[in-house]
Length: 350
Image (cartoon, rainbow, N blue to C red; front, side, top):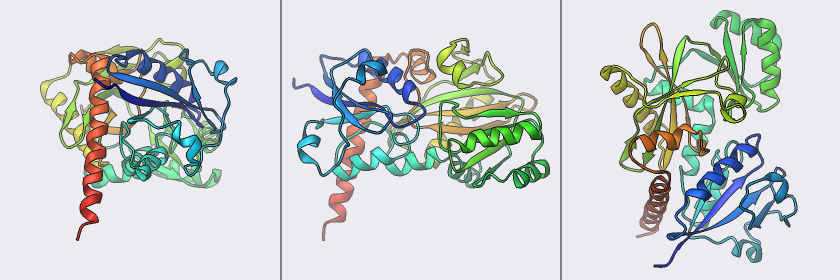
């Protein structure tokens, strides 16, 4: 049987570059080499591309490679990158936000994960929150700002929210640039940090809650895992807690009342559908401690695939191994591409 040629794309021009290398290493390790022929496409922090045979996924060893600026019309260079299907594991901007997905769609190439439009919707937390509100999904009270005006930010937060609050860049993941503020001074300092990463930020009321996550995958028909719970060792689940310290504890599965678990799953499914998603995603939710209200937090279309990441762990609980999970995601990618091609072909008909 001919092997499926899989182009694993990782690294990227993003603050989540290092996380991408860890995720790519885990995916490469668990891909069935009897079934797939993976090859590695590394993008450095400057956005330059290279083909590499290095499988240790260490940034230092990739610096020795010959890089090129990727231009879609440079056929000699692009031809060496040809794959049956691409697997982008580029967390954050320039990878998770629909840009590279749009390139695949223009080229008519199958790829794993959400399409370009859905990726953009999910990556922009402000737009996603507006769509969630329109769909009737409950959320923590929030404001967003497009200008770092200290006086205006301080005044509006005083009027509309109460401390403590979380300050987040609009379009980053892995908790990059997120701070918790207990007062106005901390708020404005955190706003400066967040605006250093993005030109749009969110300020959200801190809720006394439990943080839950659900893994979702599928196109027309979707599967939902049982929920898991994060118990951060820091005040919140920040970057160090996620990827450096490794002290976060997980409850997998988490014990919830049947009614609450049903609501959590229903909310996750509705959030996935609200953003018109396909492929896979991790849905993050809050369970308010006092009321047991379920709030949608955000949806990650390229969640972490590291050895400690919740997305594959939750599927393993369902009896789906890491390798079997990758098989399903690749199959969803081929199916999505075939459906898009069918729609385009029908649109070109008389």
